[in-house]
Length: 392
Image (cartoon, rainbow, N blue to C red):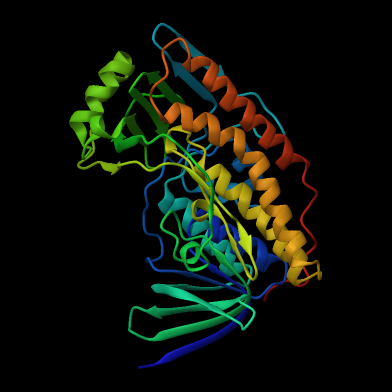
């Protein structure tokens, strides 16, 4: 059986939004990066798609937003909230240079980020299943082990291993990253893509145990979702979605009937949110590997890109500039947790579907305030360090 031996400054496990963005930023600033993923290039994945203002700000600074727009991702300049007796339309106002929001399909966003990482000099390998981490005699993580689809074994040494491999993270489990905060609520969600659905922006509809929404995305389609307690969603599909939409927005029900429905829907059966310890000796976590909350808040992708930049800054400081690893990585976790705690807590309450019609507007105001604090922090970050070299 063949064996692959590799050596890099950083190995990033998981080539979705968080991992690919981290690899891109690290490679762009002179680090030798290996990015691996067990899936195939361009594969789809469960997602709410919506990028909030912080994510759009980052993609603009990284020089990647134009590519997302060129892929036919529609600009979103209006958000509508529906409650029991209220309809609240909001027009997006320019802030920090962001004039519109976007919700690319993951078959658009993830390949753009992977392509940017490869163009910056990262080595990218798909079809690699990571089986564990390697450690030195002091217990520090020194690399990964894995296997390729053709049966070849892989060993990749690295100064730091980054786990960006989702809620069932092999890296997080291998380093035994403890859960430091766990949510109390579990909601389920089912969604599909309607064609030619009449909509002019994001739509969020909230009724107790019956939330729904619309997210315009690529190819003239809109992602329509329904969120409720797991028992109500069951195995998902069109019947629970249309039933929940009927409770939360009669207007949306009529528009769905006038558009082309999907052939199939996808379902997330629910999982409590969590914050895991984000770093240790020779390792770090980013994205859902270290921080997950219910998708009803539609903030997962924005958090993934946020933390990719925060972690990349810390790792560049360690590997390239000689900063103490403990100081840099612990500061990364401190910032992540400071920005995440309020978002996590209010999302956990919303996902519980135990609020009343009178309570939900205030909960959403709390969510918006936490998002505004996050945006202010991202906007205040200094420019990333100048790259040590320009990849050929």
